[in-house]
Structure formats: C-alpha cells, structure tokens
Amino acid sequence: MAIISPSILSADFVNLERDIHMCRAAGAPWVHVDVMDGHFVPNITIGIPVVAALRKVTDLVLDVHLMIERPIRYVEQFCASGADYLTIHLESDTAENIHKALSAIRAKGVKAGLSIKPGTPVEALEPYLKECDLILIMTVEPGFGGQSFMADMMPKLIWLREKLSSVNPSCLLEVDGGVDLNTAPICKDAGADVLVSGSAFFKARDKAAFVAEIQK
Ligand code: DX5
Ligand code: ZN
View (tube, helix red, strand yellow):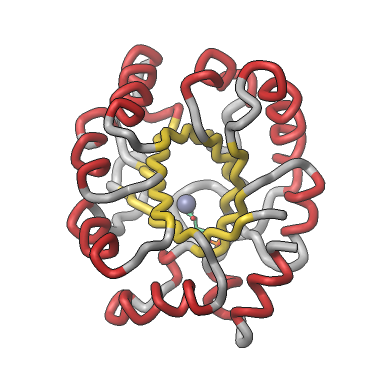
C-alpha cells in the first residue's frame, strides 16, 4: 500500500486550516509542504511560521520539502517548527554540508529526506543512502504545481530500491510532481512508497475516493 501526501501548494492559502482538515477527512495520512526561496527554484512560497501554524492544528505527518539554497542554515528551525520529515535537495549545497544537514535533522529526532531534480543522476545519491529516512525523486522540475509527470524518472526508483535493499531497507521512496490517478500506478510499479499529489488531489471532486484509489 502506498501513502498519499497531498501538496498544500494547491490548497487555498486563505483557508489552509480547512484544507488540512479536508486532507485528513479524505483519509490522507501525510501532508506535503513545499518551501521555496526564489533562489533554488524560481518561485517563493511559505516558510517556518506556516509549518509551525500547521503543526498546531493537525496530527497528520508533516512532510516538509525544502527547495532552498544552503538548507543547513534553517534545518534546526524547521525541525523545531514541527516537521516530521524534512527533505533537502542534493543540489542545494556542497557534499560536506549535505551530510551535515542530514545529520543535524536526525539529531533533532526528525526523519531526514534527500531529493534530486530530474536532471541529477540517481547515482549521485549513493554516498548518502545510509543517512536518509526518505529519498524524494522529482518527476517535474521543482518550482511549480500542475506540471506533466516525467515517466522517464522511474528507472531512478528501481535503481534506488535495489541499492537500498542491502544498505537501508527501511528508507522510504517518494515521488513528487504530476502524480494523478493515471500516473500513480506507474510510480507504485517502480517501487514508490509515498506519492505527493497537489493539483490532482485538490481538483478531485471526491477526495476520499481519490485517496483510496491512490493508496491501493
Ligand atoms: C513542485 C512541488 C510539488 C508540487 C506538486 O516543485 O515540489 O510538491 O506541489 O504538484 P502537482 O501534483 O500539481 O505536480
Ligand atoms: Zn514537493
């Protein structure tokens, strides 16, 4: 069974509390929070105060995806704000700082995630596999919701599942970008555990049916 993590990038920000409760009512166990800084990606979204505010109103797993430069500067604050999973990008800093940031996240008792953009080869993740609780494979160019799913990223999941089986079998594989009822089965067949869905989830008329179908 897969886990759905609805991305609140497609929520109504004026009614964020209502929409978070809607995710829960639909049966989603996680919620995905996209943090963008206007440098690592060409868009700016939300940050630490919003994660802290969400933490106060929900017991859903807060799956925080940092698309920011040099995340090591902020990981402690995001951990303190109540993130359950905190994912950083491999491309966002030096190798030394990526190792340090993953270790800092785990030291706070938070699950550490590492993500790669579509153009980054999956082999680049190899030195970090033991230090991660989650690997996030982007299936769109990070920055915006509503883009088309890149099925050619699926070999990355297959490669990771094979590698992780010996070095870190409990590490979760997450897919983010363009996931809907048509593309979710492709992700699950390739070994994904967690499926982020923004626009498709928030557009679905029957959200409980959408969640049930994706989590099959
Ligand atoms: C893109 C974000 C995604 C986005 C997914 O940079 O990381 O989480 O919200 O949105 P959809 O599901 O619409 O592609
Ligand atoms: Zn995301």
